Image (cartoon, rainbow, N blue to C red; front, top):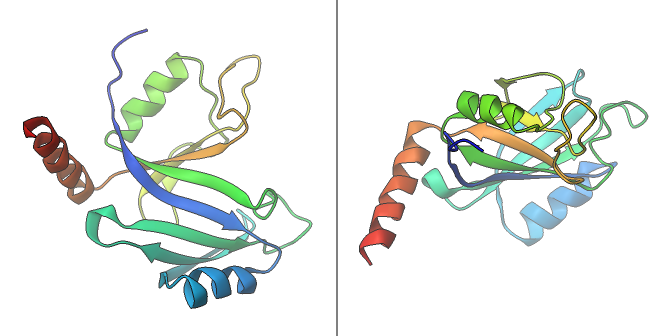
Length: 163
């Protein structure tokens, strides 16, 4: 195994789906107090989502509250309810190239702009014959971290090394 040419910096998002996002919004916004940040809708991705956030600055974490545009369509963004986890990565293209070389299967679509405007790609939940490694049942979104996030994590890493 060659040296990993990228770092996973932290959690960028958790995506939760339901047949109707209103109950999700009641829990996450009204009761738990997360802050609404935006919306995203894509017929192609079969998703209508509210984006809410916890935390601030480079350490904020999105919680995407998703419902399907078409309940019978695909992908089924509401099944399972915990749809996917998003991870900040410092070099998305290097990560994809290296992980594919290690046998990791990616979902169709390649690297593209995600709902929050960052480049993203998804590790498929299951491996196949050509790429035997997947997310072990979990859809994993890799998200290109912006400079602000990379710098903040570097400051923390240096501080921990000095402690």
